Length: 388
Image (cartoon, rainbow, N blue to C red; front, side, top):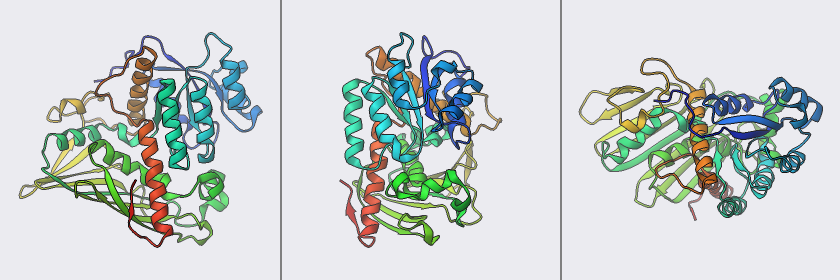
């Protein structure tokens, strides 16, 4: 169980690029990073508007002199300080992730980056090589993976509780953009602009979340080929899709599907993953994240709750408050930021922690590769394409 005690000897000196006032995601980054005393927010380039960013940083108790107008200035000035930043989180629009991540790694910093890591597999592999060369950690914020029952699912599958895995059914299909809401919302508008969002909308924005959950639960599964069909039901979003269906064949013969959508009218999140084995199935839904549905063929369905002793020990290590109390996305993100901190601290000491998984640079690469292959399939008439 987590009690908030220190995991690293000294908090990692940390900064943010983006995540300022009006950001959809900035606050959860700060809440997650600061919760367990693993990071200390000491600097930031919080906003494209320098004055607004400085005011925001001051309201976060950041030294005004360390509230910078842009990330380039921040990296240069912080490098001159003995107490300069060691890590940076990137919470900016998609089109900037590659250049900021590359600059941070080149400057010798650890990185936590919003997904997608970048737009092309070539760029992603370049960043992966740079991170390896510099011995720096890159974490990707697939925040749902921090929920305790994802670890329970991983352990159940590894232990053979489900038998041989046959089918992985995934979806993230919400309804909040079933109309052209971007016309009056700047924080949504950039997501449907190919110059800023990249080659896809919902595939990269929501589809990669359940995809990463499947990678956590099934770490040895490799995609052999896939087929993807994309639609732009709100026509002004074309050429970017607001709905997509992807079918995948794994190298071991298992099959997977992903429904990625923002036009599932009436759905809050519609984010779930179901893993079907020869003996039993499990299903996790992010609107009920504290529970895992376990269905053994021929027996009544069971609901497993987080924090209970019947779960595997590995699923209890991230518990923060005991069974019965509802935990949510902020706790899930906090668990991931704790893992990021452990990995960064170990790297700084020249060590590698065994059995510590988190959404790392390779997960970022695979997310980009999956989107790229889905777009390639869809652009060629929803044909099967080899994954690599």
